[in-house]
Structures are given as C-alpha cells and as structure tokens.
Image 1 (spheres, rainbow, N blue to C red):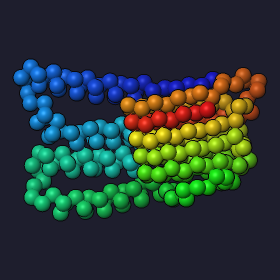
Image 2 (spheres, rainbow, N blue to C red):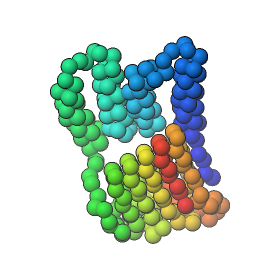
Image 3 (cartoon, one colour):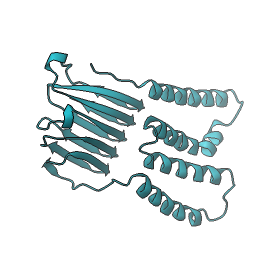
Image 4 (tube, rainbow, N blue to C red):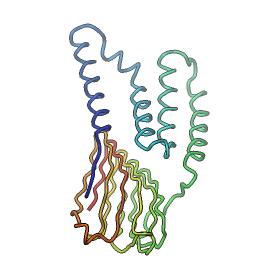
Length: 230
C-alpha cells in the first residue's frame, strides 16, 4: 500500500503564506511598512527552509540545510547592522566555511557524468546543480541511496533492477528541480513525503500483496520542485 505523508510540509507552506498575507494586510492598514519589514527579515525564509530541511531529513542529510541556515544567518546579521562595513570581506570566508561543512556533512558526495544510461552500481548517490542526468540501473542487488536535484533534473529507471533482500530505501530531494522515478510493476512503493510549494506524485499502480516481489521505500522532499514516481 502506498503512503504519502506531507502534513508537515503543508503546515509549513500554509504558515508561510499566512505570514506573508498578514504582513501585507498590516501594511495596507498602515500599521507597518511591509516592504521595509520584508527587506530586513527576508533571510529568515532561508533559515526556516534550512531548519525544515534538517527536520524533514531527521538531521541525516544536514549539508544543504546547514548551508541555508549559515547564509540566511549572515544576511540577517547584515540587515540588523550587527555586521557592518564591507560585507564581502566577511562573505567569502563564509563560503569557504560552507564548503567545509558540505564536505563534512555529505562525505559520500561524488559528481556523476552528465550521461550514463546504464549502470550496475548497487547504490544511488547523485547530486546535480543546473544540469540533468539519467540513470538506468541494471543490478540484481540495489541497496538504496540518495539523489538531490537543485535547479536541474534527475531520471531514475529501476525497471531492470532487483533489490537486495527484496527491499531498499532511497531519499530524494528536488529544489527548483524535478526527479522522475520508474519502478517495476511488481514492486510495492511506500512513499513518505514532505513538500513546500512543490509536489510529490505517486503514479505507480498499487500491487496486490500476493504479487509483490520487492518493496521500495521512498523518502521524498520537494521545495519549489516536483518528484514523480511511475
């Protein structure tokens, strides 16, 4: 049976929209300058998204969330005049720190070539920015992994693969990008999703228990992007 649980993401999205609406309502009522408030506190959006990303991934995939919090915190300090002067003197060391955090918190990262249509690897580990990749897995012992699409697209085809011990877990993150997953018709797909201004769609046909040969667990996060399972 397929399960999609995006309650936390919907709460976050709803609260953010309500906050923006209240901000402009108060501005139209003359109670505050909505433009000034937004120009000062916009970095909080980065901080909140970073925190949400950490919580949604149960702090297991902390690199992206930590970097968003670090960058948002820096600009928040600049806007509050806590950091003054030539801010770029502070910002480029911040980028170096962020790169170090990324290396520490995502040790398994390795770039993939743009095109590798068929692979026999047992694990999934993909991260793309402003590009796209297609992966067709042809292994009898796929064990799971992670894929992140940031301003890009990832296509994953498992129709020729089999799962180690008949079960595996993959974590998918789409941020201003998209991920498409193709799975065999005799796999059960269990989806646990969170979305903020995005969508996670499970279009895979449900499989009767007697016909299920394997179970793929998918933990999906979509922010201003989409993830589709077929």
